[in-house]
Image 1 (cartoon, rainbow, N blue to C red):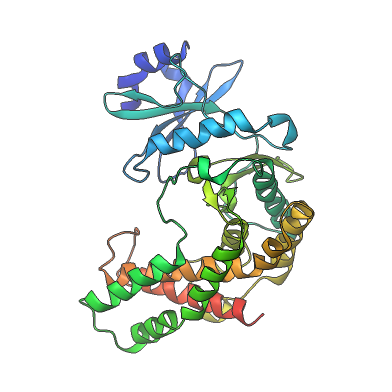
Image 2: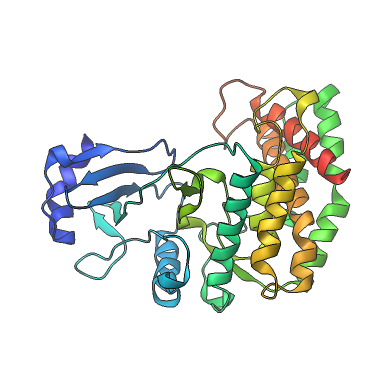
Length: 341
């Protein structure tokens, strides 16, 4: 285990006695290298941070520091496992050019799929409660951990550029997809409308279901995790990403084209969770914008998958040449279903 090369310095920086046999790889995350540290009386999560994906670790550290100072953990019904400061009060420890961090371990279950409307409801409530917990934080204080992450206007322009410079023959199914997505200009205009109207909030910005830890019996959410994408955003971002990933009858890589629809019980549960938590806290316009979020977040991923295919599959990991094309088709069918609701 390569981590052992840095173990002595990690022990010094955190004032811990850690033996080699107390560390093991943990989870199935694809971005950071994650380890469980079992000290007997307590467990911790140790990560070697991937600064190729997140190129501004100092911004993430800045945002986490704001959360530590500004959010009262007693007011949340779940845990935010934020990084533990080292002996220098730093949230990241840099060792030989590599970034490490330590965080509390939270018991429970992390899943990749929602199996019931109730699980969807709990997820929506948790992510909405996270936004509400930071509603008092000025959005201007937060830094962009991934610049322009959810900028639909920019993603549309990037698709236009990809279409104009592609080496692929834009015919047949590819032309159908290009025409569909370039025809989403009204959605881009609606995005700009909401942008001019809504307040910026602290959002999680990556509300996939595996960024929650449920209790073992799925009766509640124990923790909201993967807090690296926290930044200023709109409430409908977090709702919309849940809709895209939870309320579709098929996963984003599915080619069961005729089966790609909106799972209405899960969609209704997501909406109920956000509305209940946001009642009296979110503005009426924010509540009204939620359905747009599902369309917008589905569309932005369609833009990105299709642009990547046109650019020669240079960003997303693929297992066969047409996978990004098929992902874009998948998102097109979901977007059509959402627009037909």
